[in-house]
Length: 230
Image 1: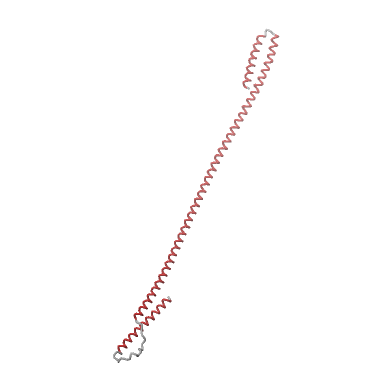
Image 2: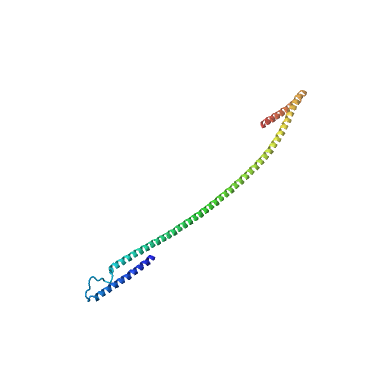
């Protein structure tokens, strides 16, 4: 601005000088026209007026100065426009970068939320599967325990029945053994008696012999049955 003000002041001064020079030239011409009727003076007389610069030279100088000022002003405006454009470009780039960062942060938050929801869902599903497996294991264990208790009861019942039957068989066997022993003793005694009675009485020989043979057959049958059972 100071340069521009200085340029304006110099231009104003040039204009004033140009006006003064033009006025001087006009005054000189008027004076020359008025003194043309006078007798010619000697040539050695010096003119009281100083030589004046031609107006065309002043105009060219002014034009050059004005053109230079315009170029400088245009350059300053161009530089200012470039700086403004650069600042605007930086501002837009900053806005775009901030928007990109916000979008990136938003996507990261959404992805994090999705991952958290996926993790919670997987954890819930895993807990449900564990609960189902636990219930199945409980059911299998319950059925196994019921089956084991039922088998144990059946074993106890069969063992009790076997014990009862075995005790009964032992009782029967003992009774049969005692009966057999008694019959064997009887058979032996009868044999002795039969042998003794054979010598005492001939008339009773035939009935005693028949009775003895029947007892012998009975004893032999009992003895064979006892051996088969053993």
